[in-house]
Length: 157
Image 1: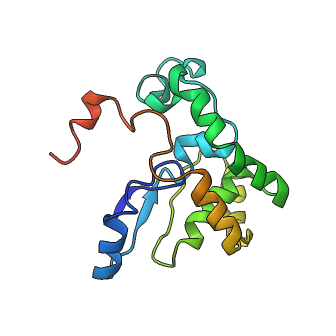
Image 2 (image 1 turned 60 degrees about the vertical axis):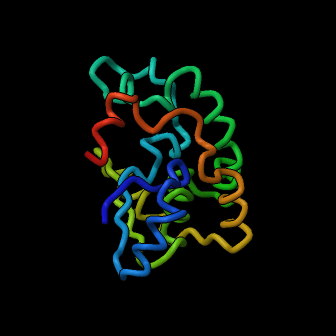
């Protein structure tokens, strides 16, 4: 199954992932870097160019939510710095540590980010790291809706 799943969006954990595992179905998470927020280079929606979907389609990047989300991800960025890796690598490694049945598909336009993302397989997160990440960014910790209401209405139609 393909769906959004990351430290940023954990809505699948309660019901969907256990069901997928019960049925022997793998998960291919898109937006594993929180639509760019988990790279450590987040910026508010107002700073994106006209025409960039994040400017108008990302409630979590809007000014009223941006600062709250930046604060919520501070531990995550600190852990990456402590390990000497990038924030993106920690985010992807967290997913890889969640199980062999989870294979994230980060999107990128640049070779250097592809290479950086591939480095996530070498990032070791121990049980304490995983627990700390889970506690720092629990399900529902992200401020703002996943989509604007007009977009959300199109899901599950």
